[in-house]
Amino acid sequence: MLNEYDLIRRVRRLSLDQLRLWIDDGWLRPDPQATQVAFTEVDVARAELICHLRLDLDVNDEAMPVVLSLLDQLYSTRHQLRIAAEAIGHLPADARDRLVAELRRRLTTDH
Image 1 (cartoon, rainbow, N blue to C red):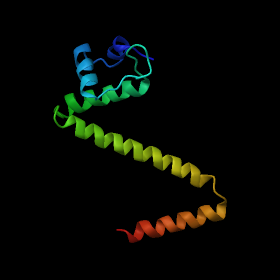
Image 2: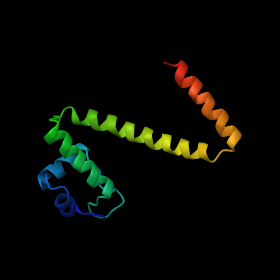
Image 3: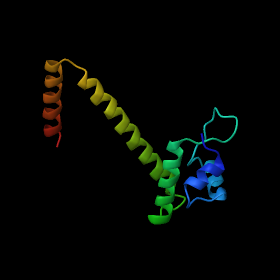
Image 4: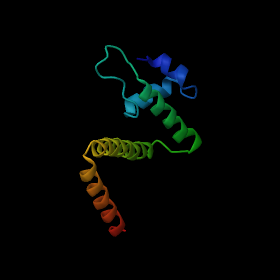
């Protein structure tokens, strides 16, 4: 786990004041189980993403919650699809082949 100072050392474009504002705004969420403010590697990546969005892409404070929410939904969907793909991979070959054929049929007819 990383503390605030570890995080800002890792994310060079982030200041302590910004970090604390982002926590207050809910853009970064330290581990709620920790006795002190603590971050994970996922938080490092999210802080770098927020820096990129704000500094490189000029996403403003009003738009940031919407952008982060959409990205969170996208990442959640990708995670769920990865789990589904793993489950499909464990099916017997005949069931897997039928499922893949049905998915292809539906994906080509929905467009």
